[in-house]
Amino acid sequence: MFGQYLAVGRDTDAAMILASVRVPSSFAVLFDRHFDAIYSYLRRRVGAYLAEDLAAQTFEEAFRLRARYDLTREDARPWLYGIATNLGRNHWRQEHRRLLAYSRLPREATEADMSDVAVSRADSDALAPLVARALGSLSPAERDTLLLLAWAQLSYREISDALDVPIGTVRSRLSRARAQVRELIGGSGQYRDENDVLPGPRWGSNHG
Amino acid sequence: MDELDLIARFPGADDATALVKEEVRARARVRVMRTVVASEADRGLGPARSPASRTVRLGIAAAIGAFILALIVPVAFTDHAGSSASAALLRLAEKAGAGTGWEHPTPHQLIYTRSSGLSPVCRGESCLLEPFKRESWIAPDGSGRIMETRRSQTSDETFEPGGQAFRDLYETLGWSLERIRRHIEALAGVEDADDFTTFVVIGQLMGETQLLAEKRVDLFRIAATLPDTEQLGPTNDALGRPGIGIGYSSGGLRYEVIFDVDTALVLEQRVSEVRDGAEPISIAAVPGGWLVAGSFSTYEASGLVASTDERL
Image 1 (cartoon, rainbow over the protein chains, first blue to last red):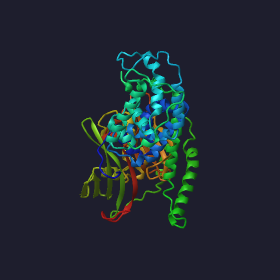
Image 2: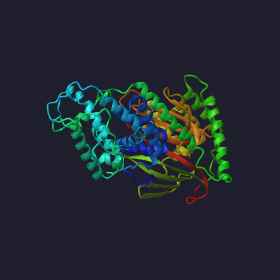
Image 3: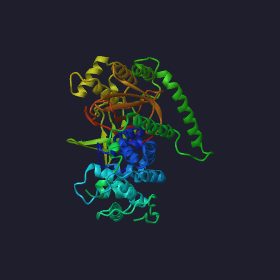
Image 4: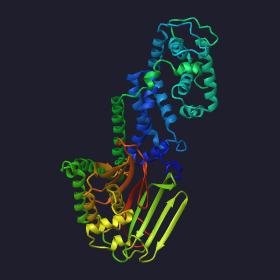
């Protein structure tokens, strides 16, 4: 798109990416704006040690791909989260181990029930092993979609941009993922029987 | 509370929302900026070509030249500790005074210049960055032609002798430093232009390729008197040409000019956003327009031609 007229707002990420095509050092602005968010997201997914490496990789990859950035998208967060998610996918074993570790934490208040709207912070901590188990049971595509919503706080449209899938696919993945999480956590007030082994991801359902 | 809230509160949420450790950010930033800098160096080599092509040989020569410059420039331009920018500007003044790369046009010749980049278009508080391409043909008598393309629109103006406002820049000789200062202040529209504005105006004047070499020397000398100019060291322009960067920061913006170390001619002007502890801004009013982070102007070609239809 470079070379055409582009109505790029002066403060937007798109303006900085466009500028960095000709003046690479302009890319530093994008790093300064978004590194913390990308790093924090990755840290929750793969742990601090890997997150630092992957967050840096995310920006290196973004820099490499900047000439192909869709400049009509002023906010680069979905694009960066998409790159980070793709890079993190290569480390799904690490993420799975983290979830497994969480799922084995003792539940101090196992009677807590998510159907109770007044569930406290302590209760949500108590439910963490079940949440971990539920997240671990999702397919990678469903987990990516759900965590971009819950952790990165992207909108459906932004998730669609980040993962490069139609928005209908985002809706259907979220619907399935949330239903499965509800079921495993025990939305009806009944927790599933616990197994020591985290349910494996459903690899066959990556495409919507 | 639904399942989404539970996931959002999943352990790690507190860590994730806590401030990222400064050393983590710093390590990652250094790594990413190394990649950025390496790409800037690579741009100087140009795309891969057939080994037998002349372009490759030129590319290799350019690479060797860039490497040698990278070795020489820091030595040549940083030998005055504490005032390296001033020292670099004075050395550039010497280069400009030698007149290398600047030819005096005969009465029937014109100075052709081609530049391109991103320039701001502002209305009120809102600015857009817009790609532009500009060509100018300026004769010693002030006649000539300026052609500019923005969006899908092209403006093409011709000028009769004496018709160019910046004819004065070409014709006037022997200005004292004080007169040049007053000229800058007149352009800036204030009696005592601050140093940032003065540096910006100097950079803009330097970009006028019809500026006499003598005038260029004077401008470098004035710039060297500004206490807070920054020497940016060896810096490539958007075309990968190596040069020496001099900048001046104010209020979160840095105006940078990249000079050819051999000729002292301007290769590129650009505006970047910097974090200097102050509230960052990305726009500043300067004489004749606005400075907006991300904007730049690269001088692609300049030289003497015989008519307003001839290009380099």
